[in-house]
Length: 468
Image 1 (cartoon, rainbow, N blue to C red):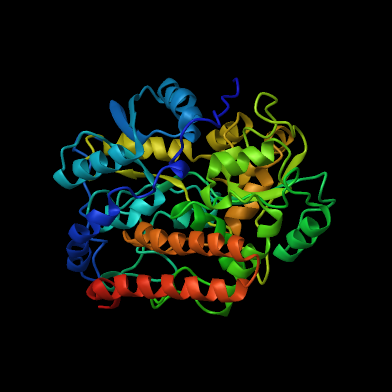
Image 2: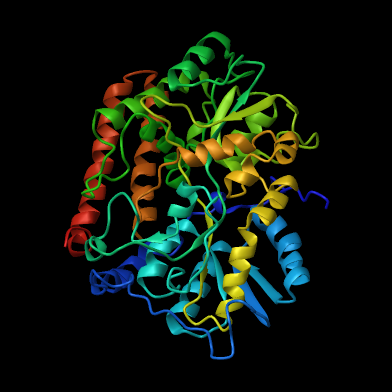
């Protein structure tokens, strides 16, 4: 099989405002969440196969819907076809823009129109889709989960979550699997081996190296996404998590305005003298561009963003020079995780075949093939440690390590709005710190306090959802 590389210039979900429509949708979703009393299965009703169907002999046709993303290219162009070749089950694969697909899939699931069997989702859709009966409980459908799927990736499909804060209506509800991970997208450290003799273990190691080796503007010590909202948050979370802070505490109070969160942001601001002055306007393309041009010593990014580009001579001047590790630690490692994940639609016409597809794609055999042929973020330990795959794609062990250390974001339909709040204040802190050239502790403290107050106000506004 020929490898199908991603096109780094193609817009991905990481370049889109994630959760488009969530802000407006939450007002409509909150009553659904509140109405789902504890002790229920997330408010969903499982659709049983028709009498003529058996899970052991699925047949016919399924329709898979997805948002457009470069990471889906191998899935779409190779594995959907391979499934049909091996099983005889026909697959109608449809994809559209991220925000359009979110609205279309949500409408299909709520209205039970049965246009799709499988939804490919962003993992932050799972709370709304599971609680609102848009997708079915895979546990109730009897889906067989491959035990070699990395647990932190698998966790993203449970509702209510197996750990972390839970919405009030679900605090006593046993978690069930509602969606199955198909691609583990996770933060990793990308670093240029010319500037680091060994993988940097801590954020202090990064800082020490950049102080001695960075020569802006020819060589920056660090590159980062600084745009307001999701980009700034994805830059900050690996630091926040590693310093022992939380996006949201288990009692839903903001967990980033204390000493841990301030220390994490202060460390990020201390990198600024060795970073591009354009950082507040930088997003994925700009930060990875610096790395690929040999102008940045290191950065953190998701797996699907740059792994396929670093050794491509058409896009990279650092072929063979970039290595990978999990994001640096301080008291612990704390990469952010954001999976591509599949649910079975509430009115799926062919549940047995949909189950068969998910079990097939996440099997050891197919996941290993996926990893060996350019599937950079396979979801099983067997695939990510396969010697043949690792010999071709040296970043696979770092993906496994990062997933195993990953820290999920708060599991609520409101999470994208939390990102807007926090990410706006991080951006403003970076702008202010660049202008002042110091005063980092005070700047970090003030902006995180503002973000915490705004997030708490939103939580209080929806008090019954979060606190009962």
